[in-house]
Image (cartoon, rainbow, N blue to C red; front, side, top):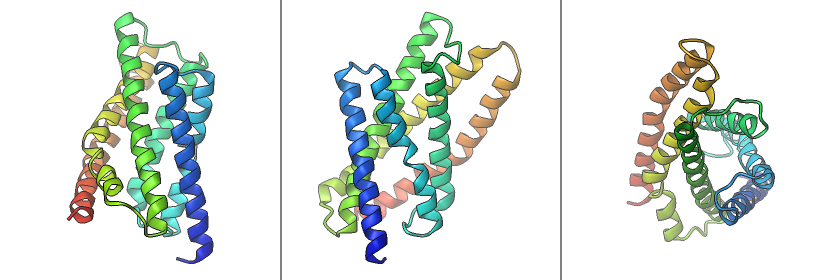
Amino acid sequence: MNNTIRNYLAAYNFTAFVFWILFLAFYLVSGLHLSNVNMWWLNIAQGMAVLEILHALLKWVKSPVLSTTAQVLSRLGVMLLINAYMLGYLPGPGTKQNALLLNAGICMALMAWSITEIVRYALYFAALFKRQPYWLLWLRYSFFIVLYPMGVTGEWLIFLFLIVPAGPAFNVNTALIAVIFVVYFLFFPRLYKYLWAQRKLKLQ
């Protein structure tokens, strides 16, 4: 890797790290409430991940293209729903119980994303200069055990309560949920298995 690419990746990882830190800080201070300010930080932090598909395609990083693309696109789908909901373009979850489940899903997903990405970007930044401490490596390849299923569960609650309530019975919305379920069913085990393999490799 030449210095230009390394410096670019260092700048990218550091910037993404800062935006996730800022989002998490504002999110926690606001009592886990998604305000306009919080959404601004979140959209930038998560939107930057699109570049990671390009990084994988150009082989600037060792991440698999297929799994990187699947993860980024799934998160962007969740972000699209959250933004539409916050802007009032979606009718919402309907009942009070559904609203509680939706809010729990949003909180689970955003907390899992934030912690995961803060650790991940910090490690990637340090690794570019071959200075990653073992404790940071351990966090990266241990937190996912809980945070990854937690994040996926949160994403599923968001999909269910922001798509299905938009119409009864079987229609485009429920068909979309079925497609999303198939995609998650195909890719979640593969991604989770890949992370376990990475954990065994990195922490041996």
